[in-house]
Length: 509
Image (cartoon, rainbow, N blue to C red; front, side, top):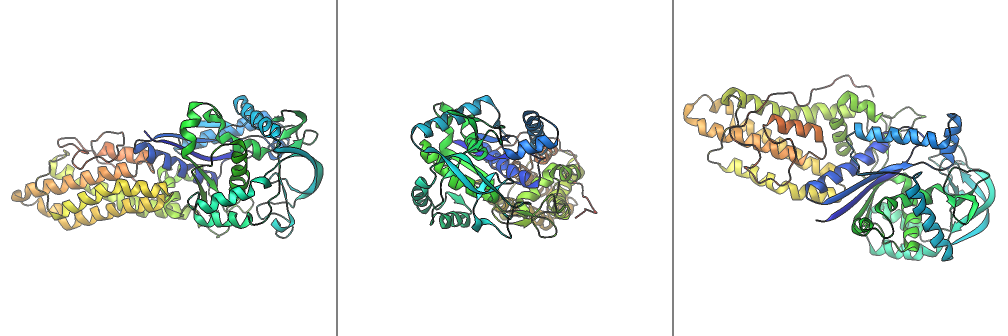
């Protein structure tokens, strides 16, 4: 059984989850569900990044100890994923003793190898990004993603010799065109690697910040939050010598947002190389979600969509469907309440919901609510059978490229085809003639079996609604993968009628 290790970012828990967090986590969850459906042994990891200056500052403003503040916000993230049907196998917390031991061991190994040294550093420091920055990164005096300009700082720091790995990283990216997806992000990093990247500050003086993992050989410093957080991808697997790490790490797929691209390339690749850890298999990088005004969603602009509120209004599955269908992974795109409502009302209610409603209603009316047995198939049915049979492999190949929206589009194309088939076959006309009873049975069975195939193909995207659909079809609640045609719904089973996707109206922007 193939192993798969899929990770979300390890989220910085200084505030509640926003739609960007949901976007990355839902994509990772859907990829994990598809791979499990195909028979892979999958670990899906998410977690909480709990150390650093922003956490300490936010905790002080909340009048809480940092540990209590971080624990409270970590629970908020865990609760959000439950409510959004994101089901991680592991939730790592960087404040856990097991993770701290891995960080300490890695620091010690690098220090003893001469890869870490102490030096005085003077420069501009971004509190928002928790790192030193260069003048060429600034736009109008600050980083584009920060509210406040960086502040000058001079202090002793321990440094990791990141520059020593620059040529290796260049060779890796040039020889691995599929390592970073989409490829334009790989080109961005290759451009950065044409010039010196310098060494990485990996400690903070305890006199300024004491909320962090202590540097093992110097209790006057704590570990830089990014060095700490990146190692939380390997610590839950039992790095360095546990079998779980050996089995799963070679298959690693990281799912991140483009705002943390540099840390997951320059920082993480150089760290893994120095530690003797092979590179991740793939880095999937998302774009930014934009508000209805076309600007990046932000709390200060008030143009964001609260994922939990949207799930409450439109349903969890409609939100998940919209996030993968509306914005192609890797590109920027607009998500608003109006967009979610439109996807719900048109794609889900009018297309899939209408197909289910009319099919179930006809089976109820013409066959007393019992699944009929198909008789002879003609060319129309054979075309549907062929399309349904091709979809599992096509969907999986697209999901592996994080083109989940394209995969969903292909499945919804089958839904449209089934709707057109129903209109052409006109069961309501066939029902008027007893001599066409066999033909009516075949058409109704084809529609039911087609819906069953759709329910399995879309189960990773909309787990609750597709389970509900299978129940309405009189089939097993559990999704199955690559079910041969004719082994989905069972003749004689009792179907039920129900509105699968109730429409909504009057969405706020």
